[in-house]
Length: 408
Image (cartoon, rainbow, N blue to C red; front, side, top):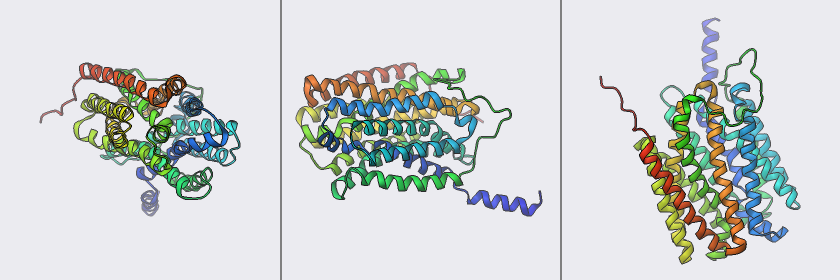
């Protein structure tokens, strides 16, 4: 190749979007998965269903996530990051179409399951793509960009849909139409991204791999996944039933406020991820759990006293703790994973997290039938405090210390 061709290739490489653009794609894709959060009350009025059914609809999303992670978690390690990113965005588009055409529970369930499939493919592939595209010396920043895109996208969904539903026409249609436009932009961005997975001949088979955790990762995977499970159970509470808590228990009926409260949790999670970078991943795991316990106690107090300010402070505190523990766990797991198994390993980590985001929430929905929304929330926070405190204590006493740099 001539020197002029080489220079031209370098110029084209510089013009290609990098890991920040991939993080933007990741955020747009995840945004669609939480768009319905402030809208469940409107669906309940239009279609007529109970709080238990709201949580079951939410769990259908989580089931879609877990199925996608188990079936296609490692596909991007074989097919490449770009094809899987495009597939995830396509599934997100189909989900938006289901909501736009919604006429009852069947399309509502279909939209949530397709949204789950999209999030399941994005969770592992999007994280791996952002890390792959990071230049030398920027992997730490790329890890923050990936987790911030995940949490930021999840937070933007309810914020945008809540504002549009409260102050714009067609509250059950416009949020999904806007998201379709953003997905189109994200798709064009993916087409410009460089492929980071080298082609292998012969290409490995694409059999579903299930939960595959390489032997070299297993020492850190267990405690990190436990912390993710605990943190995501709190996120599940907010994304599934927090708007109903605000409406029925605290008397706050503004959909924009409901969306902003959920956004506050995910925004605080991003702040917690920034804090993790200052104290190190292995110290951040138990400390994140301790902060999460404090947030849960404040949330419980807000329900008991019917206090909106306490709920907001508890949401922010719990989000910080979740973010610290989540980024610390993801950093440990992705750093220990071999390069050829990174996508599959990260996907396995997210499987545990999304089991945490779904099962406890369905339990809350079931408890509302006997205890009411407030009573169910108080029982949930009590159980979550015990779980997170136990996980934090275990991590504090069983994690090895942070490795020290070698002295010159």
